[in-house]
Length: 235
View 1 (cartoon, rainbow, N blue to C red):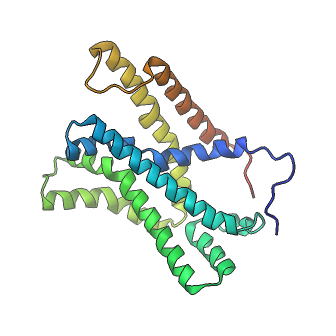
View 2: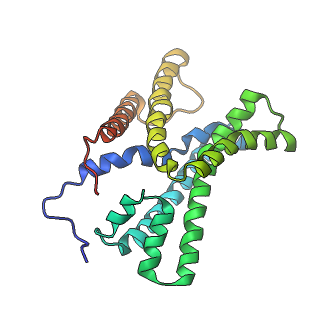
């Protein structure tokens, strides 16, 4: 079984390709307005909430990678990639290796739950934004309308284009790098200059702002280079 990479393999270009996906997967700071709505203006509690939630998600991601990719050889990934690389193809490949009906059920449940929870986590801030934008009332009827507007379009698109998620998440990472990394950093810099010391101020000062900006630019470049096949891919 081919489980080792060829000698001299460089992993950095492959890691760069994952940046847009990781940004979408762990970019929970877009939910800050919703957390403020739930917890009030309590910066310490909100930071703890985001930190604990992110670490928990990271633990599950690492656990998933160890349990799945640790059992599939490098060569077995080729047909998975050739078939689009979607989660159903991946689960089918795992089922052929494990050969266990109970494990099939567990893997399917875990995979579907991971996608569903990722969707809910990523759209929490969007949910409240749409409610404010459309001026829906904060009652059962109003929140039902908000849920329809928020979740029905992506549900329909996923039904029509089952593999569309894999393509969309990369472009989502590109957009996320702009409006959730670069723009907030610029806003923080402008806010500090105009209003001085706010009620909550993260550590690092201006150097941290510049680091965040550079990271956002690198993430954008990673997606653009990947789109034009400049970065290597495993196939």
